[in-house]
Each structure stands twice: as structure tokens, then as C-alpha cells.
Image (cartoon, rainbow, N blue to C red; front, side):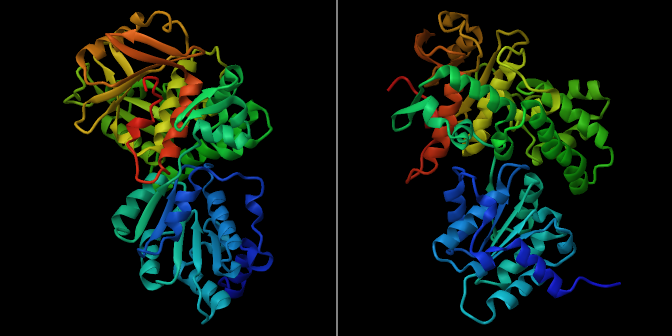
Amino acid sequence: MLEISEDDILDRMRVDNPWWKTGQVAIVSGYKKRAYFESFAEEAMQTAFRRAVVLMGPRRVGKTVLIHQLITDLISSGHPAHELLYLSMDAPIYNRLPLERAVQIFLNSQIGKQSAKPIVCFDEIQVVKNWEGQLKVLVDSYPAVRFVASGSAAGALKMKSAESGAGRFTDYLLPPLTFAEYLDLLGVENDVVEKISKFSYRSIDLTALNQHFVKYINLGGYPEIALSNDSVESLAKRLGSDIIEKVLLRDLPSLYGIGDVTELNALFTTLAYNTGQEVSLENLSQGSSVSKNTLKRYLDYLEAAFLIKRVARIDQTGKKFTRATFFKVYLTSPSMRAALFGPVDETDLAMGALVETAIFCQWFHSSELKNLRFARWDKSNDGEVDIVGLGAQQKPEWCVEVKWTDRFYERPHRLKSLSLFLQKNQQIHTVMCTTKTKSGKGQLQGREIGFLPSSEYCYMLGKNILTRQRVAGGYKDKDVQPNFFD
């Protein structure tokens, strides 16, 4: 049986790296840089430590484009184009090709014995068997080479990175788009919002902002989908095929050895339909006839694939429950619900939960995600607060009630759950309630409560999280909350 020759591999490398000849990277034409680009480039090019950067994230969030934008910037800044190698490891010709052999072919043909600072980028590295061990060897064996790897199976990559790459890998997560990124990508950000102070914004055209917000909920988490001119319905179908089906039917089974994908698919469908709602292992087990232990594994897999996020429950005093059998589940992008069940409009009954999901998703871009909870202490509607942020002492410091209606703006006293929660948690410093169109201040339990349209709140939250991450000296993520009280 013939083996793929070194010449054939090198020919394919030339196809994948046209800048060796042209100095141009065509794939990034027309794509704006995401807000993450600067920090990613800084991590990728740092030389203080000998480490590879492992770029993680779900499918279609722009990892490949981000890598090609890095290559473009390096060429523009004078880095020799022939020293930059990009390999998509899911290409058939690279199947079973050891990473070190690929690097040797590249170095021998492009670099030789000359002094150079080559950079090697492995895309879709999760398809490579024992990639983490191979990459660690490369980092140790080739100190002059900078290595970047990317993959779609975020959780599995992170697990293997932590196990095998301790001290050799730097993990970098790229989540779906924030609402602010989505507006910027479409080129409409300055048409619908304006900056009024360093970290404060307001809508110029709330009707248009709400229309964009509804489209963001349906399609806006993924750059390629968001930029397409196809119909909402056809884009939702493509989203389901590209992002959900490939992960559920291919990525997860291959990574975790799942035999019965039907159970996993049914569980995810149930969770997606109930995004933003409280669920329990007991109810899920009864409804699916799947054992609790199996359900726990499936939930771990779905969270590892960055399809869902589980959020723990606290009681009305801010204390966690001894038995954490109840939790909320959020999709990592509300767009996935539209992909499964069809798009929604602003009057759809599902909008309330999807608005909450969209707002929660902005926190995927923050290190403070681990400190988010929801409060629940009563089965009635008088015993829940949607999003609660815990402080350093693990006590509630701020809370948000998410609404897609204006009816509480004139009657804050009807926010009974929020009122009860504030009675028990006097230390809370910021109280918010979102609306559909109204903004301003109110009074609840003797303190001020801020009202802001959900679209405006979602924009400002995501914008501030990404902006303040770039502020020198750092910041506390709790300060990204829109604050009317300064």
C-alpha cells in the first residue's frame, strides 16, 4: 500500500498557505475582527513562557478566521510570510500524520538553517489522536517555534489540556458573539446606540434596537450565520445542521464513546426547549426513562461541548441548597433554540425565556460566570429571582429580574419575588429589572431599582464586559452592571 509522500504533503501545505507565494490571506476578506482579537494575538505571540495557545470554542464562532487574522496581522507587521504555517487537521491528507512530522516538513522546506521565528497553527486539532501529548513534545522540542492549536470540542480540549499540558498550554476560550459584537459585525452599532460616558450607553432608535435584538436571539451568536442574507428559516436550518447535529451526532459520540445518541439528542432537545427554566434530575429522568447517573454524564458532555450551561440555585437568604438536585439550564446561544424549533418573533410566548438566555449569555465572556446563581424558594411565581451575582463572601451583591414587558415599570411593588429577596439580603447594592421599552428608576424595599429595556441592557452588559477586560490594571466584573445611581 502506498503512503502519502512528503512531496504530496508539502504540495497540500502550499495550497493551505497561499501567503507563502502571494503574501495575502484571502479567507479574512470582509470579516471584522472580534473584540477578542487583541488579547488572543497577545497570548499567541508572548515569548516570556514556552507555551502553546489552545483556542477553544463551539463550532462557527470564528476560530479559523481569528487564526487567519493573526497571520494577516503578522505579515502586515513585517513577519516573513513563509515562516507562518496553517494546517487544518481534518483534511484527509493529514489523517494519521504525526504533528512533529508535519512541523519537520515545514521547517525543512521553508526555514532551513536560517535564523527565523516560525509560527505553526493546527486547526481542528481534536481529530488528532493523542494531540495533547504530541503538542507538548513539540513545545519542549522546538523552543524557537510558537504553536497555536484550535478545536471545536471546548470541554474535551480543556480537560486534555489540563491533564497533559500543565505548564505547556494556555487555554483561550472564544464564545458566541455578544449582542454588541453582533451589532458591530453588521455595521449598525452606531445607528442604534450612543456612548454617554466611559461605560454607559443608550439607544438612539429603540425600535430598531429591539428588532436587531430579536434577530440576534434567532441567529446572532455566530458570525457567518449573522452576516448571511439568506432567510431566517433557512439560516436556522443551517445552524442546526452545522452546529448542533455535528456536535451531537459526531463530536460527542467520538470523544466520549457514546453509543446511544438518540438519548443524548432527546435530552438536548428537551433542555433547549426549556432554556432559562429550572429543571431537576428527577423530572428529567422520569420524562426520558434514562437513569440519573447517565443523565449526569450526558449533562457533563453537553456542557463540555459548550452547548449548555448549568446554574446552581440559592434560597431567599442567598444560601446554597445541601442537595443540588434543581438547577437552571441555559443554551450558550439562544440561536440554537431557533435552529431546533424555528425562529420566534417579539410576541412569541418563548421570548421571555429567550431574552433571559440572551442576557445570561453575555456573561460567558466574563470570569465572573462562576459566581452567577438564580434564587428559588417557592414553587409559585412569588419565589424566584432570575440572575443573582455573588461577591467575595459568596453572598448576593446584585440581582436582575429579566422581563420582556413594561408592566412592572409603573408598578414595581408587583415584583414580589424581588421584594422578598431584597428583604432578606440587605447587602445587595445593585437592583435591576429589564423591560421591553421603558427605562428609568423606581423604588422597591426602600432602595432604588433601575429599569432598562432588555435589548439595551444586553448590549451594555456585553459591551462593558469586553471593554473592561482591555482596561489596564484590571477590574471587577460586578462593575459592568449598568448603574443609574452614580
